[in-house]
Image (cartoon, rainbow, N blue to C red):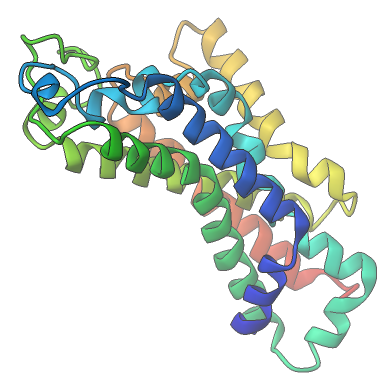
Length: 258
């Protein structure tokens, strides 16, 4: 079934459309800030490196990326369960695969695809910035201070910047997977694919409005901003992961139409 899932992913036009959009979001900032007309000596005293040039901090397309992040996560694959049920394909699949195994594989693949496409622009952008600027060390006192002392894990950023990037990307990968899973879970009770795809975006928007009115950081700011945060991130991820899995697995297993 995993081979079938892979073939299904790479033959979905929306998947490649999202990849192309990801390249655009990632490479436009690289092109705009690419150093021009310089020599090797230019870099000797130039306080810029890929870490502070990363679109997470200064990218010209980052606000667009932050806005569409939930859609990137859900559009690629979250509607496949609804598609299987609506087309009757699931009946054919379940003649070859046991239902619980089908549900588990579908959840896992959807989670991974959602996480992958969500962080794809960040990864490509960082690789592009690595091609533009040398990997010199960060220096808080030398104009290389996008992460303040009250922001997210500043010591990690200034002492182990590559690890900081990996941690940030990993957290966003997990968030993308959770958001994709929420859409998949909704498809157990709603078979309209368009509602399923937009559901994670509406959830994030609703949480953002609710937390903002309570005077707290929104989920978008916590994950996609540079504010100080620690346990809140893991609570959101834990609740979203466990909640979406139980919702999808239990209702999917009880669904009499399959």
